[in-house]
Amino acid sequence: MAVDSKPRIAGLLLVPLAWLLMTMLTSALVVAMYLSALLTPDLRNALFNNTHAFTLQWSISLGTSLIVWCYSLWVTWIFCKRSRRLPKHYIVWLLVTVLLAIKTFAFSPVSDAAAIRTLLIALLAAAILVPYFKRSQRVKNTFIEP
Image (cartoon, rainbow, N blue to C red; front, side, top):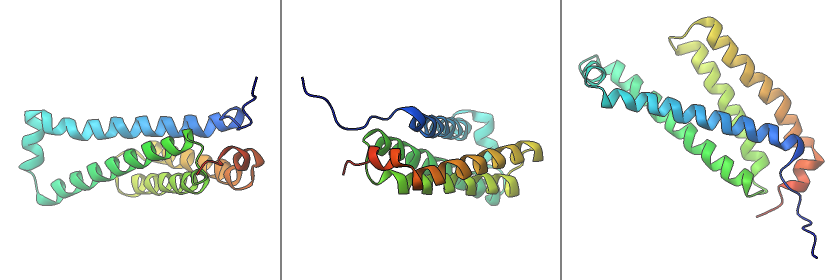
């Protein structure tokens, strides 16, 4: 019986995969929330009868959410395929989540406590996972596929 010598995604690699999946699902919910404004007549009227700046902000937020969701989906795909491109893209993805948390803290109309919590979680994830993806032998041995 042949033994599969390819390393599996297991152990500590399940933590970054879970973080990626959780963020991808959160992004999908945010996209659904923005799109729901188009489906509800009152929200749609408020959206299109408001100032141009408001509609532009809404459009940029929807676009950003869609881009983050698509990128997260793609990073999840290459994670599961064990692509050698994954470590670099996972680090970029982590940095994007930090930048979005900073944007939320600076520009979004959410409470400071919620924005700080989001920022701290993104910073903590990046602080732990970036060095892990850069130095871990497990990562080097697992992500070997073209």
